Amino acid sequence: MAQKKRSSTTTPSVEAEANLQIILAEYNHQHDKLKSSKETVNQSLTIYLTLIAFLVPVASTLLSAGIFQNRDVALLLANICLLAASASIFTLMRTYQARIEQTDAEKALSRLRNFIITFHPILKKYYSGPIYDDWATPYSNRWSSSSFWGWLALTFGAGVFTALSVISFIIFAFPKENRIVWWTVPLLAGIAVFCFCYLWIDRKLKYRAAIDIPRFPEEKKSNAQPIASK
Image (cartoon, rainbow, N blue to C red; front, side, top):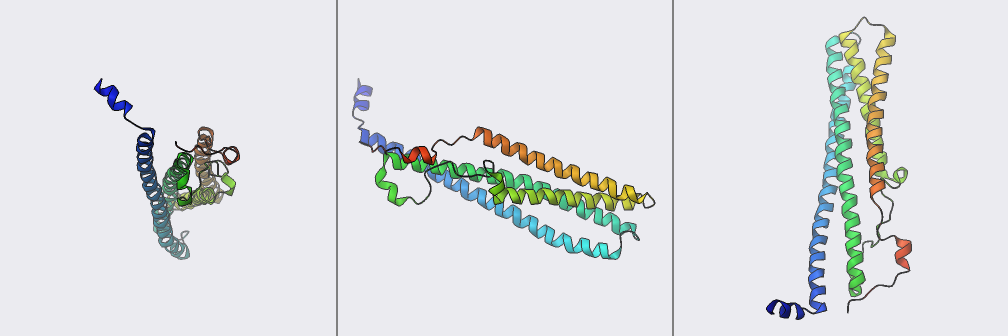
């Protein structure tokens, strides 16, 4: 009897207020997640660009020293290019993961704003962010996304650095090998790494596009009337 009495005293306004507090807590959590993912992307790109800015002058100096005349220079250049290729692949995968987490958090925030404004329309003037979740993302419209072009640049860089690493190693290990082998094997290795990275990012984006269905598209929502809490 006491339990029934307590439940009957819960008014709709009290229940709505409790739901609002839960939504606001989730909103703050998603906002922190959004901030963290942005920082991860920025830090990864900063570290990568700093590393490349250091390695490129060193590699240029080694090239000017002549890798065809000095085997030690060729081996050092091979290691430097291998490091740059590995950094490109790692940055590609790291920034993809963080960028997708950022998109998930942005969509979650939009859906939470939609809920809050639907049941508490008086709060609409305090929100400046979108309340729809059907905007273009790196996986729904990749060719207009700057993130995708950045991933494509990292993919291309990984292929180029791999090719340079392989040709430098061949010059070190097989200095008397046929010149056709010097250029054919590195070219194939670079193309293989490029294709691997591109197919990886393509598969990831296609998977995300298949599972992410907008719940509040703007066209449908624009004709709907907001439901005010009673």
